[in-house]
Image (cartoon, rainbow, N blue to C red; front, side, top):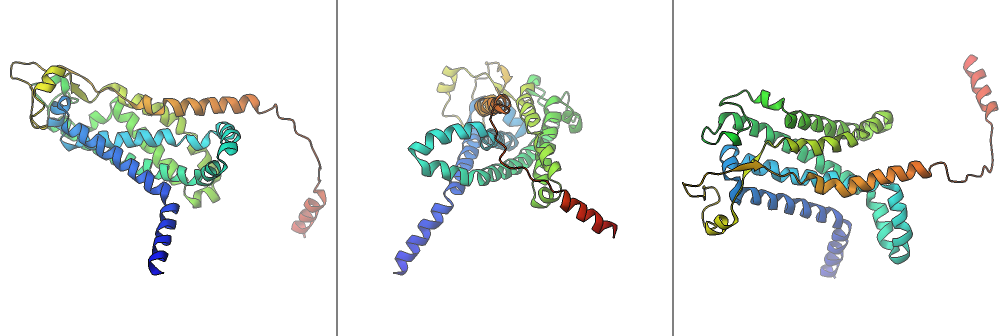
Length: 300
């Protein structure tokens, strides 16, 4: 009986925590997979030599931020959710009502993940700015972000990447601070207005990686296959070869293109259909008596 009770308890626990466990597993998989990719791939050897593990941490956390930024918009697509309700409720009612029940928890979980990784990502880039300044590569100058060795890292922060990054961090921290229960109950307008900055956050998120701060080596596929046995932290090109560099291509737009489009279409859909619904007034109540009584009471 005890074993059966434990099994039933374990099943109920997994059932209740299924979403949370799935989310943590997805985040860890994406984090580890991206970290290993930037740690081992040949084309990142030169920038990795300057930044060290700061490159891997910043890129791994960036992939998690892209995922969170995309999924945060899903619960706010009201018209889309209504459309899905008409379809899914007929085919699989339990699934849709489960989504409605977990929508708020889903949004809060993704938002907390976004805030945590935004802080870690920003800290890793502050370390990267320091390493760009102290580890200036005098042999291959085009891969540097600093203009000269030992340049003040604060000057690097004044770049497009630095300014947009700081603005996004402030927006995330502002939305997180105003999302607390105390603020929402006492100053709901502050909570509402700070959340309207999310579209600005999305624009900054797209602009942020376009400056091409991080550069990768343009690797010949044949050379990569020939030297695949060489250690990932060593240079696996011949001494006669001259490396060519290009900015690391941003994949941010791939993450947020579909959800952002759905969100904007949803807003447009709501605006166009807002005044088309027919409303029938069933009853009107006047409260002048209550108001006058209150006024007399205050005067007394």
